[in-house]
Length: 166
Image (cartoon, rainbow, N blue to C red; front, side, top):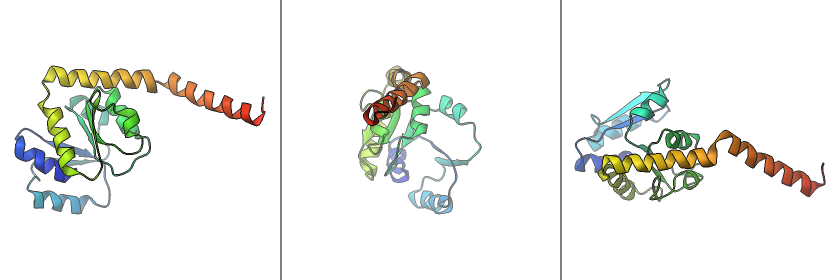
């Protein structure tokens, strides 16, 4: 993510990256920011932040994972109508519809990640808003609590029927 953002920051003087969370690599990542010359464009916010408020203020959401399960944070970003740039790993492709609700790229490829970030940034505001709204609509249609409960219920019913349990 940081390598990709360093590419983006050379192209766009208006790009800033906010990172929410905390972990044991923070110090080394802060040093890496200095090496990349982007320490003034990236802020580590730590934990305990108003994540919904930050999402509502952001222009987009970025996830550069090398592996994932089903990331709840992508569901939250989509529900917040944020257009998303993410790596195509784990459940990310189930949440982000490439070219429709955001952009997916292969993992561990800073150049392609930067290109997708720039592609999103280059969209006119109205078009970027439409991408975010498409994401919100997709999340509401496929991940609303009633929908999720229905999917789980159908799985259990199918399992019980296979096992002969009534």
